[in-house]
Image (cartoon, one colour):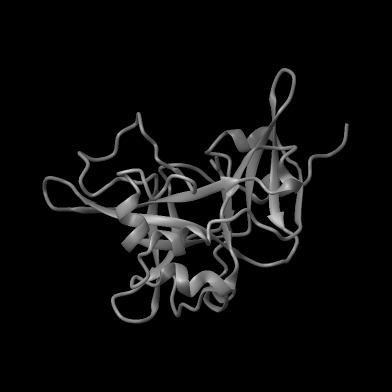
Length: 223
């Protein structure tokens, strides 16, 4: 699963990489955690794209609302088209979730060591996501999202068996196109990342969601 990631929200870089004109106000985040707002890119009301803030942890429109027993921060690529919580969003409500890196924890004999992971290519990349809109009894909407995860690339298997789906730029239009609803087409995009990755151990302060500063992505000093 993916339970933490980095979103630096540099307006110029994001506007160029994701073809949007304006971003909502959001500070750089070095330790985005479930239930917090994150920046996502989706198809707007017209033909263009829009950048929006979504709660991390999908709340289906037909549900009773946020449930602490089901965080729904990740959807498995292999079954996303089958699960009732995700299959409608897969057809109609897909998004790109910008990031500069994500964290994963390697199991050790008596503990777990967090690692920062990112493609070797510099700049932001896009993780595949789904979004939903739920209305509370008073009619106030809550928009939320989930990240799609798949099998880890061979390079990352030593750390963890899963990783977020990273969509190449050439796939962004297809993923966001609401006219494309064939699960076979969409599932074909949800592959492990094939490019080279960089990763290194970082401070265990990442374990605490309230810790959120640039030092979290610095390599752990050797002992």
